[in-house]
Every structure is written in structure tokens, then in C-alpha cells.
Amino acid sequence: MSKFRLSPRALFLVCIIAQNRVAEASLIVNGGFEDPQIASSPTFGAWTSLSTATGWTASPGGPNSTGATLISDYDTQYFPTFWAVSSGHQAALFNEGLGLDTLSQSFATTPGAVYNVTFDLASERGGPSGPTIDFLASAAGTTVDFATPIGTPFVTESFSFTATAGTTTLQFASYGQNGGNAYSPILDNVDVEVANATPEPSSIALLASGFVAFGGFYFVRRRNTAVITSLRDA
Image (cartoon, rainbow, N blue to C red; front, side, top):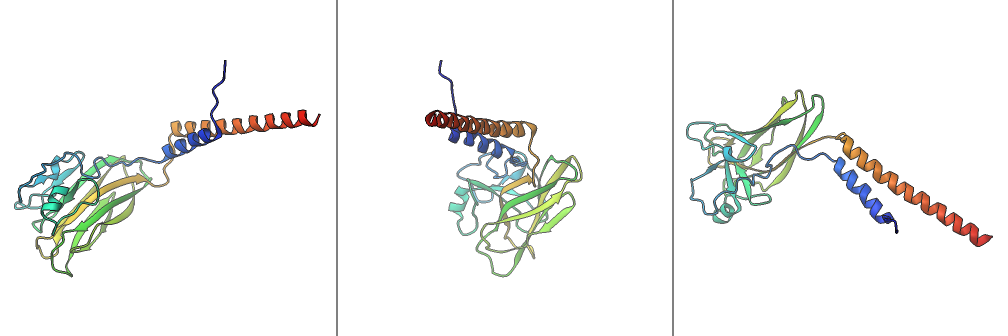
């Protein structure tokens, strides 16, 4: 009966897959705001509140504010002067100067661990040059203002925080344009990952088994080569 053997290339691939599993997955649910999928033919002003977005909590900043809303790539075609999405089909559009709208999500963290937050941020186009849009990102007592001039295309922003509890809330907040005019920030591709993540035991075991298998194959191959060489020299 023939024995099943993995080639060196296959064994090396096992090691690579195991190493990739060590990387920590994003802690954010629905970071691209793709769920739920909104209607493809919206009416201007008939917004879909981000409170319906899976994983997120949206709070309007005032009685006249709709709160943060979902926009789709259909909207960006229908109103190309103002809106855009960074990737996928949807993004989050904040208020239009009607109060401090917030968008937040909570997730499990380890006290003392450092986490990296990244997101894509843009602002509505078509407004006057010069004024900025304040956009606050905060988590575990760390707050950063990513002030963005009107008309700025998507830029990947980032900051880090140290968790102080078993659960941390990431919050985004904006008044819209300084002065209360109708130009707002657009958020997409939110991601939170552990900095220098510690591998899970299962990942360590898989990685170790891959290297052991690769090392065993290499040892056997060298031993067989040595035996064949000895026989030839005899």
C-alpha cells in the first residue's frame, strides 16, 4: 500500500496558512456598512438610518437631525457631486450640521492590550474650499479629531488605544461642517485589530505541526540522500 506524502511545497504552504491564522481578525461587525442592503432607488431625503445597520448604534444629535445614514453606490451615481463610497456598495453619511450625531459599536477587549483602529474618511464634495468638518473618533478614553476639509476624497485614517475593560465602545461623532452648513463626513471600512496579537493555542499547534512536518520531511530526505550516496561509493 502506497503512503501519502506531501511535497516540500505543500508542507511549506501548510506552514504559511498556519501563520496567517495567527493574525487577529477584525473585531468590528459590518465595518463596511454593507448590511442591510438599502434600496437601489432612494428618494432624496428619504434616508435609511444607520441604527438599522448590523452591529452599529446611531444616535441623532438633535430634533431636526436624521442621524447618521446609509448611502449606496446608487446614491453616488445619482448625486455624484456630493457623495462617494470607498469600497463595496455602501458607506455611512453623517449629519448635515444639525447636531452632534454619533455612531458606535462595542466589542470584547482585554484590559491592558493595545488595539489599532483604521477607517476610510471623506467629506461631501461641492462645497466651499477652506472650511473643515470635525470628525471625532474615540475609544477607551482616547479621542482624536480628524478634521477634514470639505471635498476631501477618501483617506485611510488610524489611531490606537489601550483597553481598560473587558468591553470597549468605539464611537464616531460629527457636527458636520463648522458653522452648521450642509456638508458632512463619509465613513467606510472601519476595522479594529489587536496590535501584536498573541496567537491562539489552536493556531500555535497548527503552525508547530506544519514546521515539524516540514522538518521531518527534510530530515528523511537528507538521510535517504546520504544512504544512496554511501551505496554508490561502496
